[in-house]
Length: 163
Image 1: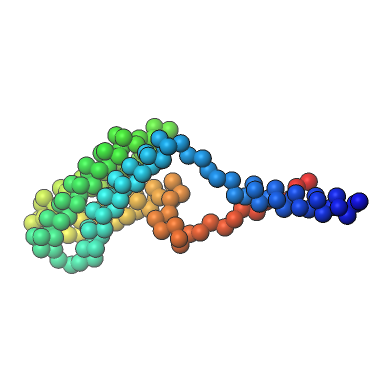
Image 2: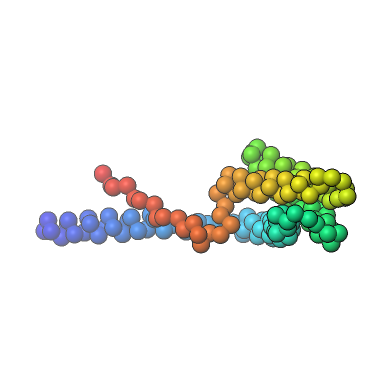
């Protein structure tokens, strides 16, 4: 009789641990729609950022490169304005600050690209790209978002022993 009770307790403990570890997260449809719209806008920002980042290590830009920088910067300014307006988080001060920094860096990039004939404009543009990179990294870390989630597979949580 005791053997059956012990086996039954072990089975229930194992089954309970498996169920607790794999609970699905229920997300309302409205919140899911909001996430997908925000993801699309962020994807557009990423596309514009990558267009500028590719050139950030070059030692000289031609007119067509300055045009790419100008257009990418303008697009990032518009997209960040849209994101800050639609998806503001008044309760998350860090997020608000980082989004503002991203918008400022993109505005500066536009101003530099407009004055591309001045001395030091290349270095200033490269500086703005680094500011954008740093801001994006800080925001992703703050929100616990991995750009390449397949590289950061989460380890299963250990279930504490039942007393």
